Structures are given as C-alpha cells and as structure tokens.
Length: 370
Ligand code: IPM
Ligand code: MG
Image 1 (cartoon, rainbow, N blue to C red):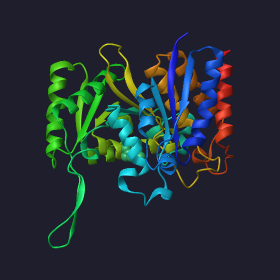
Image 2: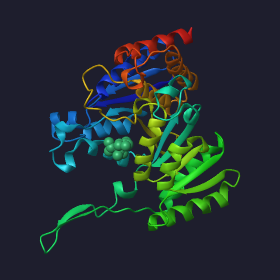
Image 3: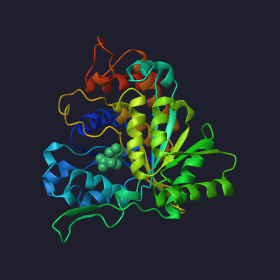
Image 4: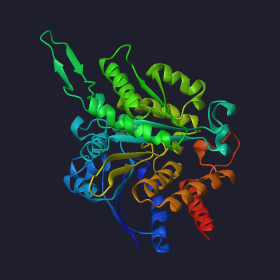
C-alpha cells in the first residue's frame, strides 16, 4: 500500500477547528487501507509566534520540505496586530510558499446547486458556476524588493513595495493555466493592468507569445484586472480558467469565493514545479477563508473548504482520484440533504456547527464507500 507523509499546520483562529474535522477523515481513510498516511502536526502563524517567537520555525520548515503534502488551516488575528512585521503570522505562510517554491495557486470556485440561494447574487448568475483562478504565488508585489518604509530628509515617511515579474515567472504560471484549461472548457482569461503597469505589459506579451507558440488550441482572452473584477460579479459563467498575478489573484479570488455562497466553501492548492526525477511537486493545500477570529473557538466555522482542500490533496499530490471524488461527492450530498453551517444558511434555516458538519461529511463518505 502506498504511504504518504502529510504535515498538518492548523495555525490560528478557526484553523484548528476545521483541521480537526479533516483529521477524522484522514484517520478513517488510513484505517480503511485506502493508503497509509503518516501525519505530523506543527505550529504556524500566531500559534507558532506565541510558542517560539517566530511565525514558523526552521524545524517546521524542514518537516514541510520533507512532506509529500502540507495541509494548512489559517493564520492571523487581532491578537498579533502589534508583533514585529517579520514575525507576523502571515509571514509563516509566505515563507512556506516562497521556500517550497509554490508558484502556482489553484483556486476553484464551484457553485453547488443547493447553495445558489446562499450567494448574494441572483441564482441564474451563479447556478452551475465552475471556474478556476490560477494565481501566481511567489512573485510580484508580495516579494519584490525594495519593500520598506523610509524616513525622508524632510521628515516625511515613504512606504515602498515593488511589483516585479520576469518572463520565466509569467511563462511557467501561464503554462499551468493553459494545461489546466485543456482538461476543462479550453479557455484562459489572462488578467493584468497593462494600461498602467510595465509588469502588466510584460505579462500580456509573455502570455500571448506562449499561447502562439504552444497553446493555439486553447481560447485566450485578456481582460484588465479592474474590468475582470466587474465581469466576475456581472456574468462569471463567461470564464473557465483565469490566470493573474499574486496581488490581483488575492483580491479576485475573494470575490470569486463569494460567488459560491460563502468564503467558507473555497479550497485551494499551491503547487511547485515538477521534480524532473520523481515527477512529484511540492504542495500545500489550504482553505481560502482565513482565520475568521470573530467566530473562532465557537464551533461555528464551516469545514467544507478544508475538506475540499484535502480532496485536492488526494487528487493532485497522491493521485487518489477515487477517494478525492468520494470526498467531493460527500460534500455535495450533505448540502443536497439541507445541512448548513451558519455562513451558508438562508434566513430561517437551522444551522449546524463545525463538528456536526464534519461528522455528516465523514458519514456520507463512509456510506458512499460501501
Ligand atoms: C490568501 C491570504 C494571504 C495572502 C494572507 C494570509 C497572507 O489572503 O491566501 O489569499 O494575501 O496571500
Ligand atoms: Mg487572500
């Protein structure tokens, strides 16, 4: 039986609560003999800062490097608002992305039919929605240098962040988008601000050149990032795969999340380059929702994005496609049966807590497996 090393980093806020639910599923799959999962758990974010003074330790980084996949909960919260910038909870996540080389962030936004009424948009606009945002994750303004606040001679202070992309970085993320589109509805929309930014001009030229050289069978469209934000809420079904930079991808994927009814629904995969020898990629899977400090510790969080992220782990890192389908079908069935956490309940509908939702998904997986 195949054996996989899985590192769990629950983090802060609702991270540990939603991770706990998925932990039950991992143990069950292990007991069933679907595969053998060797799991380790470590600290990240504010939890790590409180224990060690760092948002992630070298030891935890070492475990992440050695793992076949990392499952990540969430980081951050008001408790750590005043910690030094270098040690803020988010720095742990950014170090994981950078040091593991996870340049490709896949954020699918799927609207389950049962949830069409939970979205703030009209049913006809989002029913049947199935799009993926491919976000560049290790470049752009997140990591560009200089990145600083300096004091000028006149005593004023100046903040500087640097947006920077090389052709190699644009090329490899565009390739991920084109290859993904070939397995889907064969359309890529590339997004930047070429009307204002040099990086946007280079992004546009590089994606266009790659398309011409290798992917002419895929439909390619360009939209300015502001217009794309508008189109996402106007008629999102026009899209299949959207490819964009780190910052635009951050913003647009939160918008896309709400199309599906709730931020609590959106999973994501962050992938590195394929190792030429083993064919493996470094990978980290995380829900898009973040730590939600307002509801943390109350047992109210929706664990579906975390389950969805684990389904992506099974699919992309372990090649356990049947098990991945099982988890995704279980999520869909539980929603069909009317089960709702608070974030996706409509007015007057009863809401269940995190562990009731987790247990229901696990029961449904078990029922489907028999
Ligand atoms: C995300 C988050 C992160 C980001 C934060 C927590 C650093 O918003 O994954 O979308 O900005 O990338
Ligand atoms: Mg974000």
